[in-house]
Image (cartoon, one colour):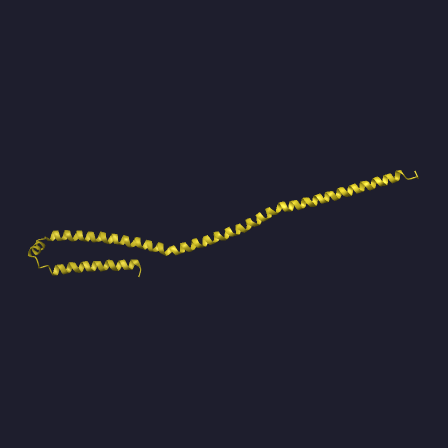
Length: 160
């Protein structure tokens, strides 16, 4: 049973009880105090009509406020019904964000690793370059020495 059904049944039960009590009082006036009985019999039809109208107005106001309360409670109930969906959605978003952060962390670690290896690679390439330059210079010197020996040999040869 929903909240609205509960309050609707409660409202109708209160109306029925109030109507039953008024009918009972009309059929069985209290007989304990004669003065009270006289004062109730002295009420004119206009006064009882006015009292009845005021009572009806008060009951209508109470019923209206009760309906507002029911509507408000239904709104709260609807919000509570949607709350698990909201929590589930937030949980999914949190999981997605966590996965994104993990992926980003892994990528950042790879970039840092690559950047850290750059000085090592540069040093290795510099050593190779220096060795290559030294080899070329060494070959150049050997070639120059060989050329000088050949020139010296040619200049000292007796056939000229």
